[in-house]
Image (cartoon, rainbow, N blue to C red; front, side):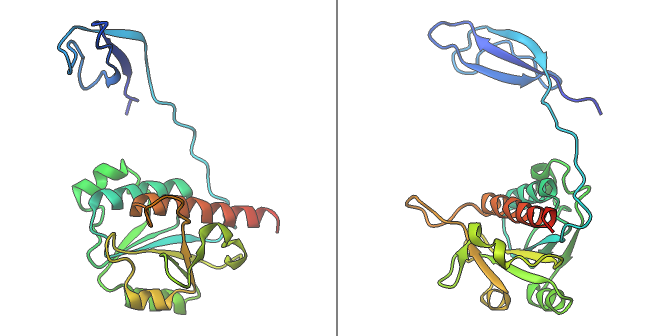
Length: 221
């Protein structure tokens, strides 16, 4: 599959000057969508640079995600994309969490679901018990009276132990029983007036930070 070519277009009306890129394989821009004046191409067509894929070091502890009753297909697709980029081993979709079988999940993940291992489970508690009994460390991303900052979690990450990062429903959060099963509860510090981030944004921050900690620790063993 060839990489798409883009072209920047700019409105010729000096009072407007709207400027934006367009995918040449989809549509050629002739008139400004704001003022209807003619649009002109600026510069040469270009493609979006993609850095070559890097393999995750084999001895790095496995990092997997458990998505507990998420409701948004867009969030799930975005999480698949972030998890894939961070080198996550597996994604467990639980309860009402939509899976890559849904077209909107696939649209948001932009193909990340193709080479990201995943499975569906009706009951997150049953799955968490199974994972915990197999030696996995359950990490809940949730703001609670007992949670610690994500950015101070490195001493709690045990080298060689599989990490299961658990993400809860966008509104109600993680199932209370699942939260009680967690070995670690982590939150992302908030500086503004809001007390939480979008689930996909929060997961992206956490999965990259924990992945970095695991790789960083491995490099110094």
